[in-house]
Length: 337
Image (cartoon, rainbow, N blue to C red):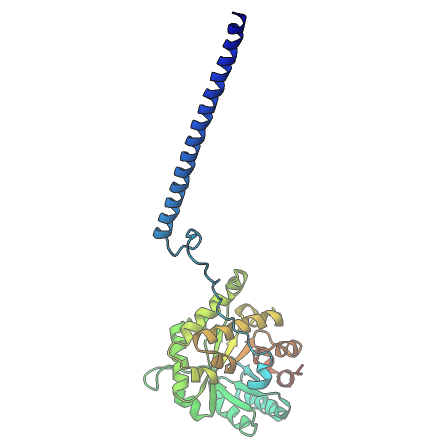
């Protein structure tokens, strides 16, 4: 009897051990089944993703890895472009000055008398009534050209006060201003008007000097490039790349014209570089490298040397300082770096 009582616990323990083994075996089987099912579900889901989004490489792990996209090449202007391919050109915009024909003739004569010292080329833009007298003065100065401040977009007709392109050309004009900020702001000329002036100037075999630039509010709002791009796009509609190569673009920050505020040379350079980049986008690199870009905005004998040392500044459009022969001649004879 004692032996039977001792055997009972042993048998019970054996039964528990057997049951535990069966439970572990069942659990292992369930885990294997669950793992297999989970794996199959995961593979199926990924396969669906691969079929639904075959081009989404971030989700399609079965797709072969793709090469990283290659960025478009960035145009880098030639470092020595001004020296190698572009002749500097400085213009004097007299606006509605001086007051008499005698003063205009005297000023033009004084400028041309010292023209042998100038670097590059020069243009004088007198008021229309003085074009004849100034034409006589510049006739003997090889590097000094005559320009008109404005032409109308019609050849002739009943347009009181207007000046036809044939009229200024007959007086010896080679260049014509278009889009100056004072014409845009004071006289309300639109980009469509300016575009017509540019096209009419080219039609008569003269070269436009297209003025573009931002106001102080636009400058403060970091819209310089946007404004210049929009004006270029509108003002050059229908203008061929060959015409652009021969014309002049004048960047004039409106806030620096006649205000005494000076745009630093390095800031002006960045805008000029952008304008050249934009011309390359609109036309091609060859056109962008050929077109001459002037800076205008309170240019003085004190600021011209640094401005002209910038690689993309090919000249200046001078206002008040062009009315004083000594000052303008110093600007024309700027010191090259």
